Amino acid sequence: MDIFYPLCLKTSWSMYHKHIGEINMGTIYDGLEEIGPHFELSETHKMVRQSVREFAEKEIAPYVKEWDQAHEFHKPILKKMAEQGILGISLPVKYGGGGLDYISLAIACEELERIDTSMRVILSVHNGLCSSTIFQWGNKEQKEKYLPKLATGEVIGTFGLTEPAAGSDPAGIKSRCRKEGDEWVINGEKMWISYTNSSDVFLIFAYEEDVKHKGMRAFIVERAFGGVTTGNIEHKMGVRAGETGWIHLDEVRVPSENLLGEPEEGFKIAMSSLDWGRYTVGAGAVGGAKASLEASVAYANERETFGKKIGQHQFIQGMIADMVADIEAAELLVWKAGWVKNQGKINTRETSLSKWYATNAAVRCADRAIQIHGAYGFCDDYPVARYYRNVRGATIYEGSNEIQKIIQARYALGYFKDKPLRCMPPKYDPEEWMNPDTDKY
Ligand code: CAA
Image (cartoon, rainbow, N blue to C red; front, top):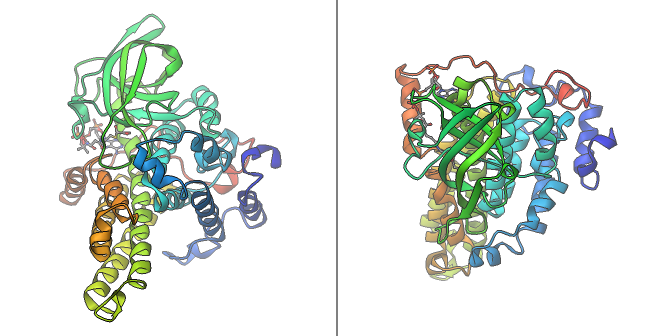
């Protein structure tokens, strides 16, 4: 088995691979799933938490203030995340991944954002929007060609849907593509895209025909195809230790085998990608909220006013209690969305709800953390100002929270119903995902 997990061998991850191997492979929840909803993480999940936490505390935490203040993405962190197995955590072993479930992915996001949002955003675009979408919609050749390289971090992937004049309404994008012989030619501009400068592979959406939704095509574009220029957006409020950028596509020639899905499926692919991305955003937000709580508890137990620790004052206690409630609710919503994902069901409603609630909760928690820290919360002496700057963006990107409300209302009012997809989200099957020779995926 070892030869299939070379990246994980040096870490405690190999222990939980072993652990899964020793227990009944169908019982990742330790057998409790037969009883119904349960709220205990499996030993595997706990090991993921411990492993990613140790990694983030050692490799990111000591440096992140400096990176944030310098507005600098420290690119070598990608290699370290790859070596840790984080970049392919929830892809099957067959494709070079860790073979773990989607709750493990959520935990990894949570633990990374507990230290810094910029690091979780890597998982959102690379694992969530790019790799998972290729895994769901790619044909055999596309999966075999791209997933092992993505899972091991040999290449970095991102996703280009949003444009300067089309964010909330992606059906209104202006990028265009045309077929020329065996190639597609793409022209367009993408904006507010994470990690464009560091990426080698881009999922790009463009219209072939001016037919809303059905005229949109999805492509796997390699930087190496030529005609792809990228750059960073400067002076951001948050996520300063990460990249947020733009993509310029100028007569980019894409081989026809790099069309993802059937031609008319482009818009559905874009929407289902967001079911992956939003999930990681919501999960990360839980970690951001936890960081705010931890910093607040530490400060409340240290700072004194009126002759006692501020944690003894009821106004502070109220804010701490509100954070606890927000975090617990947000995490449960994320885990529920992860549970639906593990079943291989459409999870747009659950994922959108968890993203909406968790990102708002993270902003509320960071805001309270600043209030608890008083004037010290308003400067960089403590990390809570950075937490606030970082979590604020997630109420806007990957679908603003107003869009998430619209999605919830459409379901509740009966205006929108899920339709089965030709390529459903891949159901998590521990036995198959750990099997390097499986032909099921
Ligand atoms: N999965 C699969 N198919 C879906 C779907 C989903 N989650 N949601 C909708 N569809 C399908 C519908 O079933 C429908 O199919 P039919 O044509 O067969 O009926 C089709 O897609 C059109 O659906 P809608 O009528 O609902 O489409 P709409 O144009 O009204 O869009 C919306 C609705 C939900 C508001 C959508 O526009 C939306 O989510 N907007 C927000 C976009 C967003 O989140 N952008 C952020 C991108 S992140 C980025 O680019 C930055 C980065 O760094 C990565």
